[in-house]
Image 1 (cartoon, protein in one colour):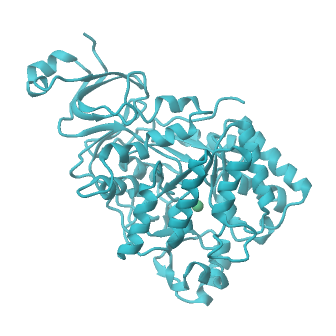
Image 2 (tube, rainbow, N blue to C red):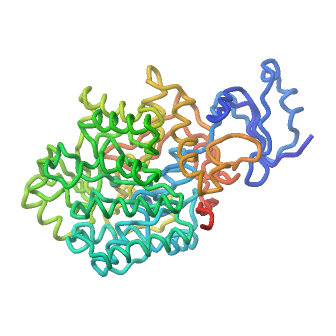
Image 3 (spheres, protein in one colour):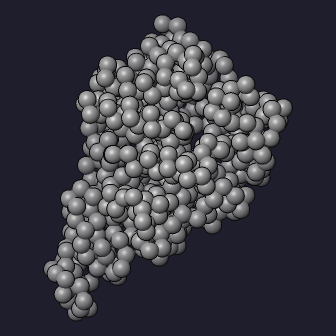
Length: 506
Ligand SMILES: [Zn+2]
């Protein structure tokens, strides 16, 4: 008999890798899962038997009636502070990775996060967009996403790169990969003037390093008929030509009502052996900096948008007119706006979203956004969040919403499958170059004690477009590296057990 440090007793343990779905005790020692002990059906009934199986755990916690699963690995989190990451922890996230935008220099990104402390594990891809801002526009980088948002609308970084600038971009990306970057984030949709040849070169670099790329796709040909290349074709072609693992970010929001065409293309490429993966988030609206190229007044029509489709997040103002849109793009290009892309209330649009989320192998990823404060930012450790915090509801609610929509009553997927899309699939996507991923996304002895315990009947998102920072409910306990971050649905205020996740040295 062992005295385990923590025993989660009598929960319904679901391991998406082995398919285990049984009542079991999970013992935790330090930062690892020490044992998973399925119970004979009869033993689950008797308290004495329970006590006999793992006596005297320092924390002996009855979780009967609750699901115990691996914590969620979010491949697409732009959250850059403790407050937003706590919201993600309440949503079941135990590892939040910034892979689509990425940061550069990546070493500064890791250093900033380590200095502040993080409630969940963290990691970064390098950033093609930031490398380009530096090489093409001479912008100074500081390892944060803030630099990207500040300059998002500036044409200076979006123009075609000279061969010398292209070398500088590749050098910057390679240096970040040598520093442990998890992949290459490619925000090509924000620089439509950049050449398809440049995109292929970046994919080639990723293939050589054995890391995935994470693309915010260029415009689709249905939106911009004279585009240099269709955004979906570009991703699929790069997988075929370079052999790189090409991850297609938020296929829901960049494809909008063309998602069936895009998924068909991806599916055929996958069937032919191309390494293309997809992700989606369960919301009809997007969010980005108002200075983004595709939000220029003359370009809104490409996506069926008008200024009235945009809400300025900081104040909740409907942008409304072309003149106001111009003003905001001028004065606050990085200011976040909610963009109504699909109407969640319209069954046809909801069907598009569901098809993106249930596509074979698709990963659930949040595209969680930094918090915007209407007024001065409070102490980063203050909790609960003041009502002045604003973001996209996906920041706080993506994963519990996916559980509710996809695995709830009448949902299209079973619980194990939804959990797999939130934990095991993202771990496997990164596994080739990131040794830590072998211990994540699974509940097995020796794996990391990144665990969630939730009530399947109650688990749900609470955030809305109007109240975007309400934490999800039903996540009873969330542990990161064996430490409670959420306990009995309450935040553990001083818990910052998150660790860096890095790629192995090249
Ligand atoms: Zn994006």
